[in-house]
Image 1 (cartoon, one colour):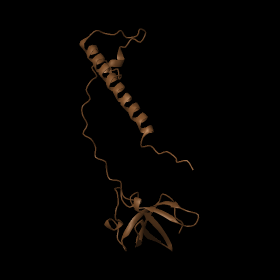
Image 2 (spheres, one colour; image 1 turned 90 degrees about the vertical axis):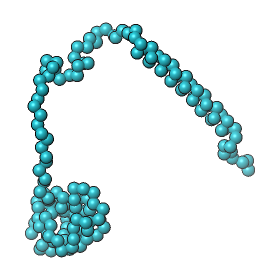
Image 3 (tube, helix red, strand yellow; image 1 turned 120 degrees about the vertical axis):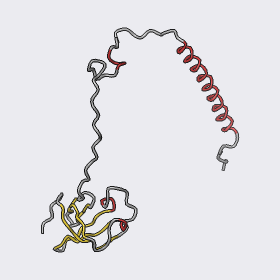
Image 4 (cartoon, rainbow, N blue to C red; image 1 turned 30 degrees about the vertical axis):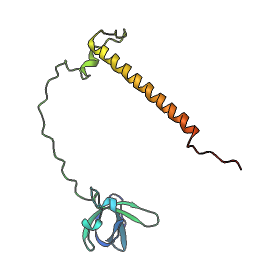
Length: 160
């Protein structure tokens, strides 16, 4: 019996370990299903999904030169039909069918934007100045800590 990679076979589980299960494919061929190929979800205990003596469908993933056969139970399972999302009626686009977001549609890049005088820019300037002040305070505290740390409590090599 010549095994083909990608083909599905039936086999009987002959042994279960912490890392996988061994499957007898017949005619003296035995392959292994790694724990990651047992189910489409996380598998902590193989015995929760498979049992010794159970007949399973497996897909051949690889046949190594030394004769080791890699199998998968999860890839051999019938794919579950994906649930279809309910279709919504399409709404006509209000911006004339242009797919770009509204802020990109009518932008003139030939002239740089002019600052606008509004209460928003004043608020931003206040926030920025407070941020800069706090940042300067934190930097000076950090420098002060680094300077004092080098004078006391730091590791210094003793002369021999």
